[in-house]
Length: 276
Length: 276
Image 1 (cartoon, chains in turn yellow, cyan):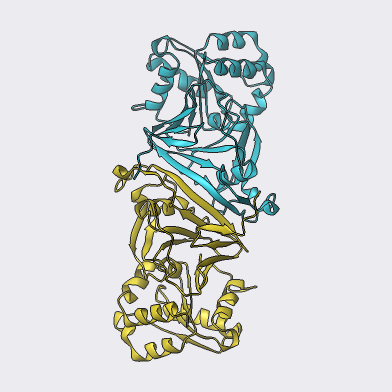
Image 2: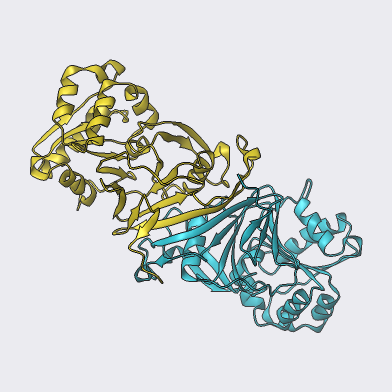
């Protein structure tokens, strides 16, 4: 039903499921620093999803200093026109890594979706010159179709999830976060039923799905990355789309992956396959 | 990996996900009465899972009287030796329908697992002379491997679910209930990862998976029946079994079915397949 996924992103792009360790081992934030160039890294933090962007920016700035990055900027976009600010655009141009904080994905998109800053960031990431990481709301925006909000405790149905438009760094996926922590598998299935040309990626807290330049997803961290693949779906009851009645959907493929696992976006398979 | 499922049960067997409507339309309880013979139905209620078995038995007795059943017995098994009581065995022998109430599946199993009553009931059901329904705990016991209890809010892992032994009416399945209502998909996946020769059946509240004599599952009610099929699984990280680390499992097949849908246990497919 679905074609093989393209690999628009040259990445690396890290979708972090929120609540990543900021105090102890900080494996995921360390991995991001490494991807951004280690001691040579010039990192821009975009804390616009947060209600307290200055404080949030400072949190990550302090961490990335401790982790040995060379230079850290906080790009404080709190009004739409900031996304056109030549100084921020110049700081972005120098950045080898960009970090999107958590908060509210709709706030982040409203502030930045159409901005020159976002266009430039997309170009830098697609050219492979900048590593991108987003946590929680910052991960939700990575796809083109975005889960704005939703519920749990119900069978998959159209009313369980509100969809909006994300930044489209990885257009072929829909990312959800705080995944099992907030019981979001039913809402991701609902989102994929509405967009069966996409691949659902659910990322747990303190866990990361790292999309590399070769079209592979690597799993880091203590939780799981869940992939909801509708490629073999033979049957969706479209009559029920738009209502809160439970959907019917058959032949959905699910992969639950953890630390060290690797998934190939082209073959849509986990590799290597250790046959049981 | 898994062979086609056998159809041990001549049924009908109704796995009800708990909280079935008892006041208004009562579609599911009506369907059970119908399966048990309508106006000719002789129904035995086994309320042993409940902490208040007498009151629970009376609730269902009153309903089945209102729904027009011919005769209703409450088989009050509150101590193990009651499962050998000749009077209860005689009442069971006359029954065209048996209803297992909700409560605690471990209490139900402890009281009845090895009893003559349960052996006789299994024989009657497998011969097709008695329709069986179980709700909530009464549904959990239908498989041979049984989910005794478990958690939610975590990625699938071995520690998320406690497994025990059920009554084995449908040995090839593991039934979970209150399914999306209590966010139990991760625990059912955990159970299936531990028993990849079984088929997971998750039933929502006020919803029923009706296993008919032809090896088909019919969905009734307002929620979903979710089927977790590991037949195509290529990879399970067995190292992680036994720990609370997230499991890795690839190529799990999922069907989310709702009212009117039908699943064939032999072909392991939804039918008819309305190709999208």
